[in-house]
Length: 531
Image: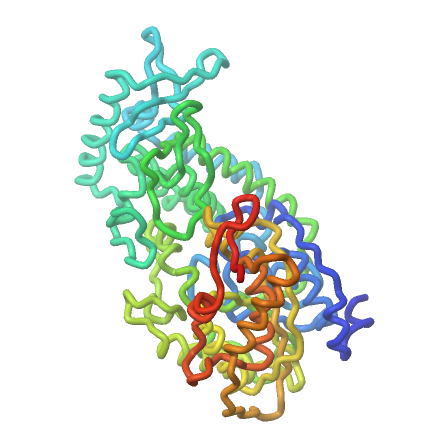
């Protein structure tokens, strides 16, 4: 076993090869951001623990650490203030409900949709009614539709019938709203706004908003809590698919991709997928994912706590054998704001004030981000056993965020002992279309718990390290692209804690490089720094 070979010899960690694997079906049950390769997590868990040990993730997110710990007969403990994170992990690990009962209840929900509402998602062809499969809009106008006639795929421009369906949708939504039908009209938080949409309901066509609201109303009326929770999970997992956030193709009348960027963005040309069909597809993916994970989970206990890691009151001091986590990357991903896309439908009570993030729109700036991380890492130190290890992934282009998180570690009493780079299995949502200018993997930093903190007040000049690193890459490959540079540079800055320039100010890496090098097109459309 990896534990028996390597535990106690941290130097062997650098030689452990980790080739990231694609996410298995049970990691695709629900959308979330920042998922790490499952085999990266399992490798680290096996390296630092043995069966029966307690593994903590204080920034649990979608729960990879808890899930992999359970598969490996470790006791996984997850902490997250975001109720959506807790729901996703709980639903992933809980036993699959009786499939026939689940299917029966799912079909009952769909049958509750009134005929006048179901009729909205139809098209007319030679006086025959067919089910609308997809529509493509240009801004606020429906342009083309797709449906199947006798098994044949039909695409065409919209006609008068299609336009009337859109108008009828608005009238029916107004009618049902007056009858008390709920759908979220919560404001979209500024940090995740992309193109002028102001409220959550504006991320859907009126037709899809109405149908979705009636579906979740029917799900909430199910008496069996296990079945109800599973179907709410299916519902929220399908929401992005029939939202207006999917780019559309006017020729094929298909959606071009899923919800990939970490913003609420409705493209100028977007799709309107059939809600019922989307739910049916997600239901089958749910069944498939649950069947896939069922033989992998163990009877080992796991704990999920919806609370802040700034005060892990549910965990005893010195009770945790190992910590692996993925703390918030400063200003990179606004998890709570993005999760509002689901939590508003579920009417979750969310402690937005308690979120650890850099978000100037909510007056959450450096001081708040730093203070909260200091408290979080002090708590991690408290619950971890003496001489225990903490590993975490982190990256951000701004040095100030690196300094904040490393300072939180060292102040708490941790000393860095290993840095390892691991490629991504899939591109991250934060990369969007700018893949050549972002990191394409993760640094995994491992720290050891000391008996007491070691304070280092010396300011090391990182400017020289930056310039030397750029020169090294230019000599090696002819230019220094952003991804290669940061992969090479950041560990050097971290290990030396060289976060300042020659004047004692926080490093501005881009500014330093721009003063000595030229950024230009170099090869195959790629850009980089050259002499």
